[in-house]
Length: 213
Image 1 (cartoon, rainbow, N blue to C red):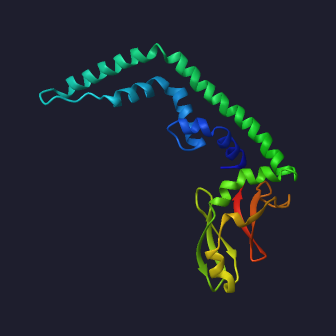
Image 2: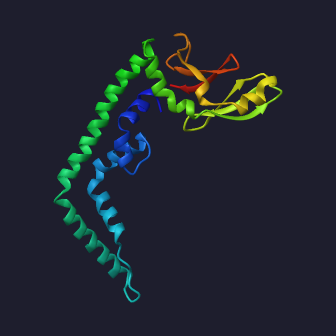
Image 3: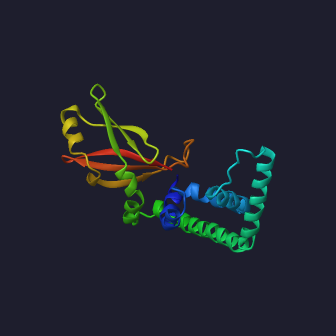
């Protein structure tokens, strides 16, 4: 998920919450499936709420015919209201497109304007809360940690002398700054932006990578 998707998901969080999906990607994919095959999806969903059962003395062919007739009845009932349901799907997809256009402009502003510090904190607040310390490597003087919804692994250097206390007192409240950095234009991944967060402990800053977009 890139920065634009994060913003879109925030804009549409109420719509996503009301749906049967958990993420923006799943929500949009479900709407696209409905757009292409709405009637069949609704018929199958309705049938599953009260499916027919095969009788003990009923042939399979007879049962299948009975199911087919039931599906046709459901299709006829749903068809009358289908145009309005299709319009609702189109409205929701148009809303995603509009939110995406706004999010793209906001993301460009966020990544280019140094005055947008508050926006950076709003956007990456969830990322900071999802940083979790793992095992400490005493030989390398590093903590393993994961970040993001996908639990991406990374490590941060912490002197062994303070490592135990660092873990005990670790809190997302101690992040003090968010840094957005782009590689030099000549590098192969020059379009990627790395998001890092400064973490202050005992007067010293430690840098955690929390996103790459």
